[in-house]
Length: 71
Image (tube, rainbow, N blue to C red; front, side, top):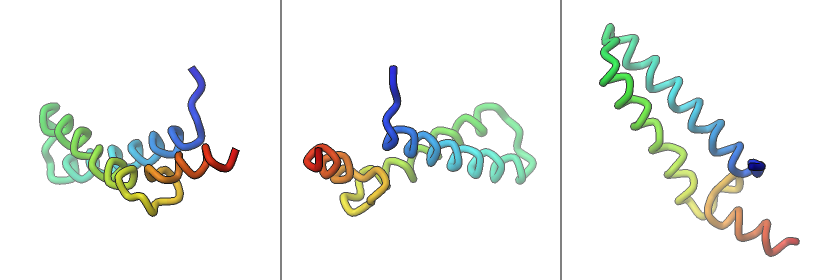
């Protein structure tokens, strides 16, 4: 399976969000796996918001449509 540049950008964004969320939870002294997992799930919010933003040039919904039309 080949990953497109747009999908790679979204995965990289999610990875950064996970890292930030998990470090923030761990910095409070909470190392419970359930809470760290919740942080990883909560990290989905920023990439989803970027995808939903039609003006986002990196991987917003219109970005994929514009690239297809340009071909």
